[in-house]
Image (cartoon, rainbow, N blue to C red):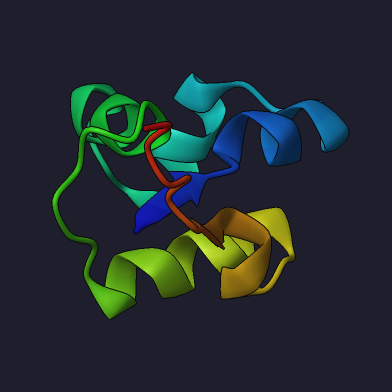
Length: 73
């Protein structure tokens, strides 16, 4: 199971920089970058809510479940 973060696409669609989003949601650029690159292990609902409000989107626009592909054998 993998959860993909679609923050790059949303930022591009809204012509917003990661720095601008960080300022709007009151997160450090480093923490937002960790989330954007998929290296975050968790996200608080308050953070997800702030990002959704800033980007005018739903949580499902940011987070996507991608099934693992079975190994070839």
